[in-house]
Length: 331
Image (cartoon, rainbow, N blue to C red):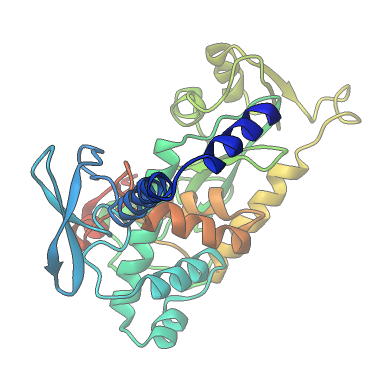
């Protein structure tokens, strides 16, 4: 390689000035093309690079794709699409969401209404759900699976008649003893390196079918599943080709525990109470937040912003209609 470089330098030394100038212009042309391509993001619809600048829309640079004939902006398909707020505000707002800041705190901080903060919060949460669907968590090695329970919540609306109960004040307890239908199950799985998943599909104790619905596509074969002895997990192990171990069994107590997943449950309960409850219909949006923010909330803000707010192959944009009607949990 060194000999080739020396030979190249010898050839350059022997060139006349006009040839040198021609080579320099050629190289500078390549550099300018690469710089212009960096200024023109590929089309989010067909991923083509055959795009040109195409004027402005509301002060924002617009682009035209020669392949599909569509126009787009830097923010098309991203979390910030159709937003009047700057990227810096969205970056700060994502950080506030990850660290559990209240809606009123964010609204006062950025100078907009509570309703706007609510819509932005749920757009972020739904984008996190999209991210987990596109890049699903896969648990392998040793995984701890367990469930935690929170009271059902109709925050912001009247308790429906089918709930067969009166409204509860914040901090009240369930009318029935034990794990009744007043409780919503948050089924959680975590690998000891930090990969985690949390999802809700049922009230009270989950069945084997419900556990498979949650974890079936998130557990690799031959994973050692640690549980607290709930029998529903046995059918999950059989369906996924994994070994299920009860940590409460006398032979296993000294070797295994559920400390990691219990730590996640503490984080979920603490955050849930900090929000003064979460409406049950929105619980899976917050479960996505719990899955991603557990252990590393602050450090994730920048990388999440880059993933959600830069144009690419994935669409993370949701409108206000989606906030009201999309992916609601009805139990």
